[in-house]
Amino acid sequence: MRVEVATERLKERIYATITMIAVTAGLALSGHTGPAGAALSVTGTAAGLWLATLVSDGQAHMTVHGSRPDRRGILRSLYITSPLLLSAVSPLLLIGVSAMGLMAPRTALLTAVALDVLSLFIWGYVSGRRMGGRPAVALVAGVLDLLIGGAVVAVKLLAGH
Image 1 (cartoon, helix red, strand yellow):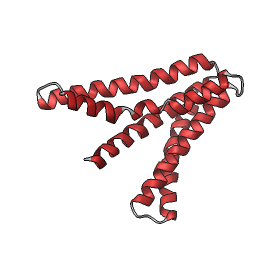
Image 2 (cartoon, helix red, strand yellow):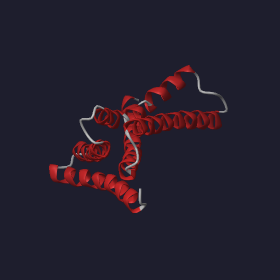
Image 3 (cartoon, one colour):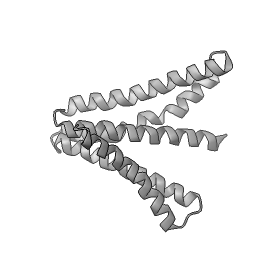
Image 4 (cartoon, helix red, strand yellow):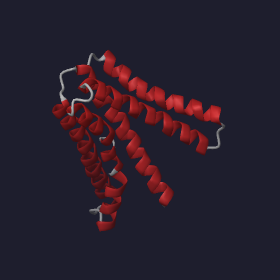
């Protein structure tokens, strides 16, 4: 059960990271958002994803089981979905650095994008190694995940954000 829960938590974190890449890239490419607006967008995105996931978990449980989740089910859902909120930490820290005047807002947001894309590479590499792959195979897995993050950024560029 522990491995299943860890898997679900990591899935939520990766999903939120990909979403946050899209949001922070869009904010950076728009060039119209200051630190306060960027922080609000990032916080709203993470909170919205988390709440939407909680609602969908509850709805799915009620539909399948014909009853509301019990206390244990609610706590499990809160625990599993909490990594969605962590997707906001890195961008918010960098936005905070920007708010202190130490970095331009666009630079802070692009750095957040780069860190999130790098985290996808790391998760891909680690998964490749955990599946028994040699470093070269794990590197390919990491690069494939990195390309997913790059594709999100490319879509934002092509969309004119």
